[in-house]
Image 1 (spheres, rainbow, N blue to C red):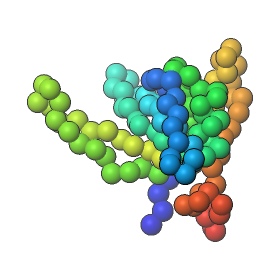
Image 2 (image 1 turned 180 degrees about the horizontal axis):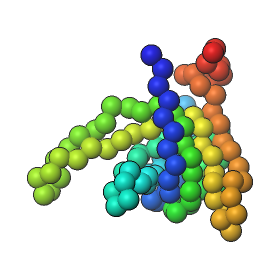
Image 3 (image 1 turned 90 degrees about the horizontal axis):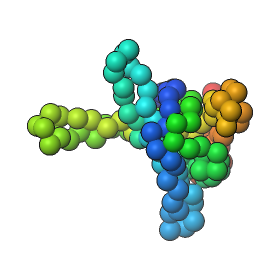
Image 4 (image 1 turned 135 degrees about the vertical axis):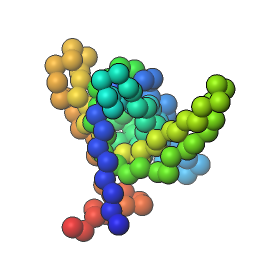
Length: 124
């Protein structure tokens, strides 16, 4: 099975950059999407390698992005108010920057090839 999810929204916070023990860059950020007129869905997005570096360099809180990738199992927990909540997590292999400093439109694209090591494309 193959899944692909595309979301468009705004960053809820600045990008957090970290590195794995072998030095691989990983960037994490949250993206708010509008599910209905008055309902916001938050996504936790992770990117790797060159895509992570580009996101860390160019994205800030409020930036508009298009993210394409695969979804992990949602994390479910119970809030302080007793309500059950879920967190949606997306591992993005493509991130398109839809806003510039002047909000003039699409300015850059960061893509990570599919595959575990990022060296191979999906063959179809």
